[in-house]
Image (cartoon, rainbow, N blue to C red):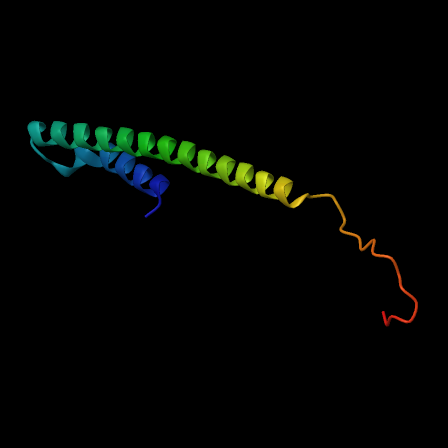
Length: 88
């Protein structure tokens, strides 16, 4: 389940908790647990986003270095002299 959908579901459950008829202690526990769950999901999403950006940057850098090694932009030419009588 995507993180956004989990966060929306937890928020919806928090909004409905007073109508479920749980004792006050249980209601407080569920509110705290849901709140911590939302916070942990948001932290996880931000860490995941940073790691994704870092991996993409490393991939771009590796691709750039590979292109430089291969001599990107240079068109290989065949400058060998043409000898008469050779089939081309």
